[in-house]
Length: 163
Image (cartoon, rainbow, N blue to C red; front, side, top):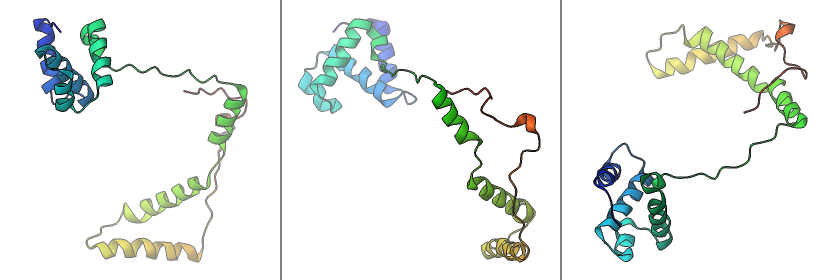
């Protein structure tokens, strides 16, 4: 395999670079070893690869030179956004979850106890939130999930985007 001087420089930078992805560095080493004239069995031993790996990347390099060493992802077809899919996403995003209540509870503890406290020993950090929880449980108040502004509510007529 014949390489230009610019290709050799670029391949060496890729093969030895610390900020280069490992798979790209391995491919660059492969091409350099092929250019040195090593046999496939010697390359297999050095790079711990198989014949199909050597064949694939040497063929891509021969066809596209340096650009051929970059991975290609065949990808997949995009989802078709149907009314049913849109309704499903809307239902999942607008329905309040019990986790919202849990988040609100922990935010309340964090605001009322942890953010305002000074905790020197670790047992003190355990004791103060528990004291707060026991006191709160004497007269508990449920946290309500409300949306006060009806114009900001998400409805089935709302326009949403799915990515």
